[in-house]
Amino acid sequence: MIGASLFTILAAWFAVHQGHAPLRFVSGKISAIGSDQLDLRLDPEQVPVELVELVNSFNTMIGRMEGAFNQLSNFSADIAHELRTPLTNIALHTEVGLSKDRDINEYREILYSNLEEYERLTNMINDMLTLAKTEYGLQKPILTDLNLNTETLELFDYFEAWAEERGVSLTREGICKTLRADRTMIKRALSNLLSNAIQHTRPGQSVTVRLRMAADGTRISVENPGTDIPADHLSKTFDRFYRADPSRQGDGAGLGLAIVKSIVDIHHGNISASSENGITVFSILLPSQ
Ligand SMILES: Nc1ncnc2c1ncn2[C@@H]1O[C@H](COP(=O)(O)OP(=O)(O)OP(=O)(O)O)[C@@H](O)[C@H]1O
Ligand SMILES: [Mg+2]
Image 1 (cartoon, rainbow, N blue to C red):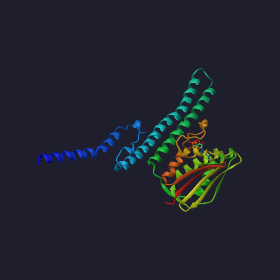
Image 2 (cartoon, helix red, strand yellow):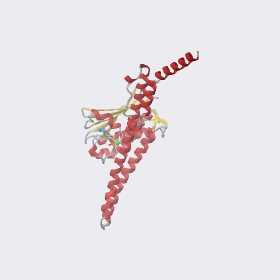
Image 3 (cartoon, rainbow, N blue to C red):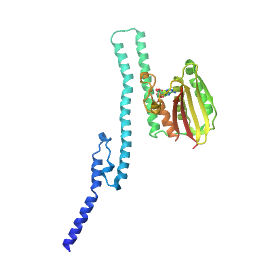
Image 4 (cartoon, helix red, strand yellow):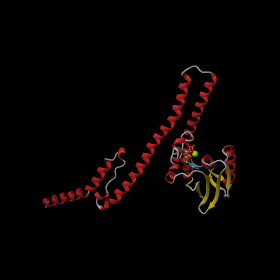
């Protein structure tokens, strides 16, 4: 009996041990994945059918982590790159200024060009802070009744001088009902879209803001005639530091649309872009709730 019991126990242990082999295999593979190997995936064909779903879910999770990790690493690299240019310019101006005695006007000019770079840095840092606060939910939207019809006209007033200087006119079409949203944030989003639209419109043409009540909420679109954004670049325009034309680095940090998207997201809305036949439209849907 003792022999039979021992045999049964051993057989049971062996069966359990063998049964767990695929789990140990998966566990060994998972523990070998470090932050530098997030591209590794488990092969669902190497595990029994009961574990296939677990392996697939794990692969999906690690894929998401890889994406987030890459985005974060790229973000640090992008910040470093973006901050380097203005800082190098400031150092260069100062070095040139100090290289010999100059008259007061030359010093003044150097200070002015440094001031421009300081302003660029301040704007970029403020934009990054805004983005971080809205993206990570540190800044909650303060919902108030918002009348977009008048807010749009107020923004037109604000942009009027610049638009006029560029020979661009601003028009509003349609009206919408009062909605609950964070006034400062929505104005910021609209103003970023407007500034892009004005910047990319040729003189003599017009930027149109369309307001419309849709079944699922309020639709706001900013439309401008101009050079098309290539289809494969369209979704990237919402990425931080993305500029369709990298040669125009001096113009902006490429954070404007990323901020717009984070503001729309925090309002549980949706933003889309289209650009064809010389018309670019950025369209926001703010849900009624
Ligand atoms: N209306 C538009 N027409 C054509 N291209 C556009 C338009 N709006 C945005 N883009 C492209 O998308 C890129 C990203 O826009 P975004 O507003 O994020 O950055 P930016 O305007 O370059 O800089 P910032 O807004 O931070 O000053 C722009 O550089 C531009 O190439
Ligand atoms: Mg912009």
